[in-house]
Length: 210
Ligand code: IMP
Image (cartoon, rainbow, N blue to C red; front, side, top):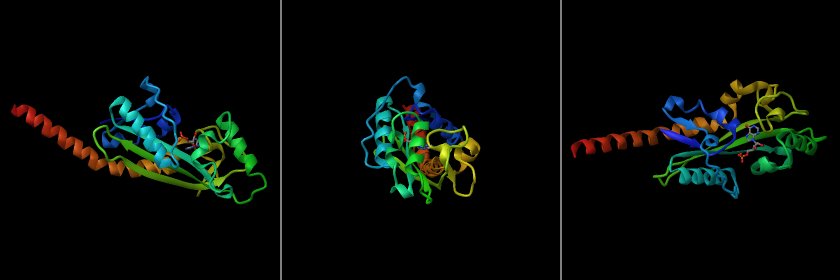
């Protein structure tokens, strides 16, 4: 089965592309589909936004679509920037990490967590799959490392003493919020893939009988 990633974010694709191979699923990069689909993310939480994106891509391309909606929640800031992480401040990823560090100046309590909600929508099924993954950690005092994207240079996952940017994809694809969400959604996907396999078999049998 082919599933399109409902996003032109190459970093997200890089972190997810290998994960579905063992299930026989090919994840197609949305940015290669020559179909700029950018629905307004008007949801009140990650799940609503993930469903908005997955539905828009699945309807436009008439194929299964997978969307990730994610964000960084900082305890001392009451969970901000949260669902607004991508637009928390004008400019680049580096501008947003600087914005967050300035908000946290003088704050000793630096607990935070990344959340990723993954939704898969199928064009011929009413029931989407949804799963949320979490990665706990802390916000560093300054940016370190050059890998990853977004707030990776200032997020130190629990159990480590380096940022996601320093740890790189090898660690991130095992322990991140997105990795956790992928693991959960992959388990939910197995019976759906079986359903499609049986349906394909039955269709080809009834064609042979005609
Ligand atoms: P989305 O594309 O609307 O889901 O926006 C997610 C935003 O949250 C990104 O633009 C980043 O700012 C932040 N974010 C989500 N996941 C990560 C991650 O794995 N590393 C760093 N930042 C992330």
